[in-house]
Structures are given as structure tokens and as C-alpha cells.
Length: 473
Image: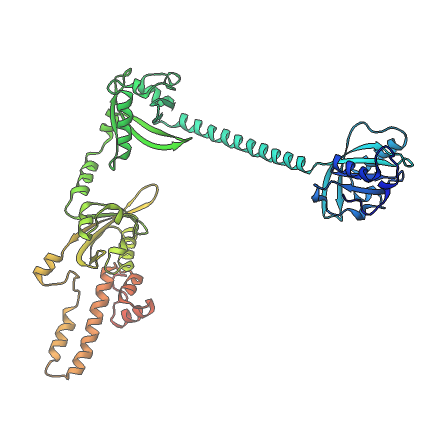
């Protein structure tokens, strides 16, 4: 027991209890006990052995109580102490906030007790920090709960507004029970049943050709289909043929089917025959086809492309950059995407296609930009010309070398040394290469410089040298 070395407790002030036991009893009955004189001076401090968080309070003895009270609680103590000195022992407990050296503070609930030495008061205190911490945790939990409720209400309001405002018929169905969790008015009108009657009922009851188990199984199979999974049903009340397109997701520990409903007649009448034929051509066409974003990321390919690059699955190529499969890599990709977006459809671009095994294949690529509301998509048709190139014994890259310089070089044979002929030929070949690069890139000087491995400044110097600077500009 800590008494701070003061012998007050052995003075015999409480003769009915042995002095050596008095401090132990008081310390055990409270977390902290103070003996305060009539002048408000702390005569002794006793701490419970189990209340180690108070630390050493020996320096409190001999100093006023108010020196260790916060500004707002000091008047409360002075008022209660004055009433005690006037002979009125406070019946209610007094909560005071202590602080020490302005470093830490803690709340204590005190009760006043009369003491037998010159109006001294015995204050028995209980540490309120555990209660305060619990209260703070409860307050924080309540605030978090209210914030969660507010967020939930806001989300529910948005969800209800969206469900009511969309024109498309939407039904939410539980996979476990097969019952309708929610439905909008558009779906209720399509099925010929009021929305209130649909909620909670079996989804299969709205149709005449499937049981609950069969319907849920059909819808789940449709969600797993790689194609545009749909299920065609006949509504019981309206008699209409309804097409259901389901999407499955998990919420609240259970799987939910989001079903979008539409009349089959509406789908048939709005379908574009040309679009269906184009889709069939894409899937079964002999030429490889690729769709990619404006930055060259592959979004879709057909079987012919998988075959030409030797890929086993769509996942092997979708999501990768198209430059991974082009002979000149990023240079080819920049030409295809930039020219198709800036100039228009690119009819023929000769390059080589490279698969993951390093096999190079001569191809001709046509590129067209397909713009929609969301993003730019570039479609490419790739034709294998390796067999034609082999049969003809010529390169797929067209030669645009002017005939006059070539004849001039041939005329030099026999009249000029080989060294001079080679020097003349170098200029001719260099001019041919520059013209070819400019032609392939659609007069894109930056792409042509990258293709030739030159800086843009060097390319302009050579264009000026051969009189090509104003050509196709």
C-alpha cells in the first residue's frame, strides 16, 4: 500500500480499527483515497495496489487539491468542500477530472466522508477511465452505425429511383428459393401482373412452360454461356413470348439473378440482318480479324486469328497489346491506330505477324476505326500473303523506287569504278527506303522516322536532300 511516507494513518484517529490496517482497508475500498484538510490541502494519498495506472502521486501531498484539478471541475470541488465544512456532507458522488503536469488527465468519482481530525475530509474515489473508454467506444459505434444507416438509406433511394426510372424490365430472383426479390413496373407490365403481387412469389409462376427448378437451372446455364446467353419463355398472364437475359451476382451471402426481360417480337424487329451476317462472318471467316482499343489493347479476335498466331484460347490474346504480334512492334501499331483514326480506313499495310514461338508470317492488314459513345475501337482484317509472296518470289512491301535513278546507275557500269557505282547506289537505295516508309505510314513523318530508326530531324534532312519534303504533304 502506498501512503507516501506519511504517518497520518497510524495516528490513532480511528480508534475502532487498528491503525496498521486502516490504510489497507481504505485502499481496497477505493481506487484512490485522499485526506483533505479544512484548507483544501492534500494530507495523504492512498492508492489501490491494483490501480497501477495512477503512477506515483507522492508529490500531491502537502499541496492544494485544486492544483491537480482541471479548470472546469475545480469550482465543483470548492463548492462541495465548502458545504462539507458547513456541516453538510454531500449525498451525491462528485465527478472530478484530475490532471498532472498537463501531461495526462483522468476522471474520478469521489464520495465525501467525515474524518475525526479538525474537519479533515476523506474522499474515496473510483477511477472512471474504464467507463469513459467504454462510453467513447459506444459513442463511436453509434456514430458508425448511424453513418451506415445513412449510407444504406442513400443507396436504397438511388436504387429505387433507378429501378423505377429505367424503361427496361428488370427482375431480381433468388437462386436458392427461386422467388422474386424485387421487380420494377416495366417488368410487371410485361408479365401482366402487379408488382406487389410479383414480389415474394416464385418466378416460374409468371411463365407457363417451366417449373421453378427447371427455370433456375436454365437461367444459371445462360449466365455461364460464352455467347449472349438468353432464355425464351412464355408469360402466363399476358401470353407474350418473353426473352430473359440473366446475370448472376452474390449479395448478403446468397446468389441473386438480375434478369432483364424483353418481348421476343421487339428483339426480332430491332435486329439488323446485316449485323447478324457480319457477326457470322467474324466468327467463321477465313481472314483473321482483330478488334482493339485506340491504344492497341486487343478486345476480341476470331478463330482465324487464333489459328494464325497459334493461340489455344481467347484468354491467350485478349487483353494483350496487338504490338506483341506485329513484326515491327509498336511502330506498326502506331501506324495502324494513328492512320485509321486521323486519316480514315487504311486499305493495305504490309508487315509481318509474329506468334509466341517467334514464327514470322507475311501479312497485309486493313484497319478501320469504329467509334461509339464510350470509346474508340479499331478493327483490323489480316490476310496471310506468305503463299502469294513465295509463289511470286517478291516481297509484299511495294517498291516505289523511281525508274530513272535505277537506269542511271545501270548506265554507269563499264564507265565508272565500282566504288563510285556503290556510292551512287547507296543514295538510290536510301531514297527508295525513305519513300517506302513514308508511303507505308501515310506520310506520318514521326512514324516513318521510327520505322527507319532515324531521329525526326535526320529524316527531314534526308527528305530535303532527295526533294521529298513537299511530296504528299
